[in-house]
Amino acid sequence: MAGAGPEIERLIALLAKLPGLGQRSARRAALALLKRREQLLLPLTAAMQDAADKVTTCRVCGSLSTQDPCAICSDPARDRAMICVVEEDSALWAMERVGAFSGRYHVLGGLLSALDGVRPEDLRMEGLIERIKAGGISEIIMALPATVEGQTTAHYIADRLKYHDNSVTISHLARGVPVGGDLDWLDDGTIAHAFKSRR
Amino acid sequence: MAGAGPEIERLIALLAKLPGLGQRSARRAALALLKRREQLLLPLTAAMQDAADKVTTCRVCGSLSTQDPCAICSDPARDRAMICVVEEDSALWAMERVGAFSGRYHVLGGLLSALDGVRPEDLRMEGLIERIKAGGISEIIMALPATVEGQTTAHYIADRLKYHDNSVTISHLARGVPVGGDLDWLDDGTIAHAFKSRR
Image (cartoon, each protein chain N blue to C red):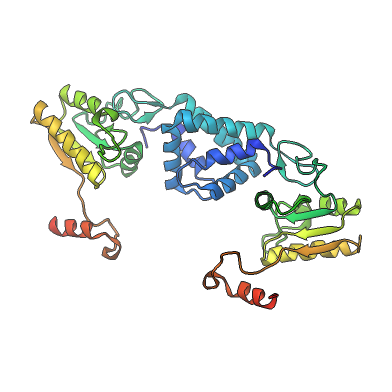
């Protein structure tokens, strides 16, 4: 790539660090950016600069937002008695797209993992406990992944809460066959779980 | 995504325009950028701004470069008698990675296509003819895709050259079985071609 110069090589190397992009797709992305300078490169650069300048972490729930507290935490119409605990902002975004939940969130920023050495103090765990201790919470909804780490994290939170307040209900997202899902494509664990929880 | 704000939504919408990224992978990419602000978001924003400021199109060969003429066109060590014709910069980059070619390039910026309405004047075709007319060229290497459009484009160039200069040799990249390629994975056309061209 002698002709392209170090600027383009650097652009490709950084694009390749995005999840889902390898070397080849990073080169394609760089070429698309450079060929569509006005329609793509300049607007995306501006959007990234804007995000870097304005996006912060909500001091209440830990979500990424341009407001602090975030729009959800500062919305008086949202139910303050319910907290939905999620691993990452992507799960919060998914819940908000569905629009089925009218309470507030808590973004842990990860899951407990003995294997990866993730401890409670590495997550936004104390913030969650403080929010519950402060009172007025009637239900904690664990919207955590159905993995060992997800379940360990949910257990840990439930355990911690027992010492503080027994009046808080802890619920979990139901497990089962996805809507429109074919049994043939599902793993055995999900099918077994869906069968046990049949109604 | 009420909580995330319009800045993040705009970032996701623009990332989704990159080739190979859909809505879901654009959200993952946006999250990775926002979570890795110092290591990824700021350096990538700077690299994109840098590319937008400095990258231009070489007036000789049409390649993307931070110099004009580009580093290859202005390198006295490169053979001025050979021009390798490519569709896009990605093909030039691939040839340069291999390092087998020591001549210069011509980036057409596309291929002739009756279906998509791409005419010679939509490509950097006249620039190529002018370069050849100027003399001193002994070989034109067509490194164009083995598609109808690629072959149509190569034919068109060969036709145009007949009227100008019969001393220029026109060659094509060899077609055949890729190195390390399993016959089972190849299309029939390639196998038939490789068989006919056996040596």
